[in-house]
Length: 226
Image (cartoon, rainbow, N blue to C red; front, side, top):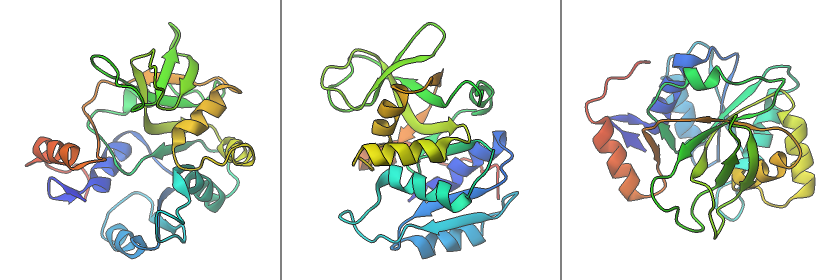
């Protein structure tokens, strides 16, 4: 999808590269769109090559889900002592990531980017993050029907190098491979997680209304990367 005359993923990559000096850039997609993403990657200038990983699926019925694709990417990258940043491809962020990434301590635990839902939180729509005064995650719930916190995690996380081990343990425990929120719920019951509260703007492009809003916001915007 295009916003401001460019693919959404190009704007996302701009924001990441403003604050991160990556050793690898891996994009996971499915078989239907792998060739389109390979063409995009070949025409995109980045400090390291973009590696497009085809997860081998072609339909909603066979898809691996977001958690399954995360696990596939980590396995593809192989054993490493480096931390891993995960960004959802439909999460168009429009703020500086640097101050939030500076809060990440791999020895302390994963870092979640958390937004505040304004007004009454509708039931069953958003992931829920409860925080203490130091922004340590007290609990996570995936789209609860009785929301008690205004905080919700974006699909934007930074994990220590143990991510592969954690994903393997979660996959052995749970059949839920689609919504990353379920992985966070499981992980929060076992490890310390921390949050950084983001100011926005942020566009979760899951429907035509949000896509239209993002296109209006990015109209005439100049890219920071090629």
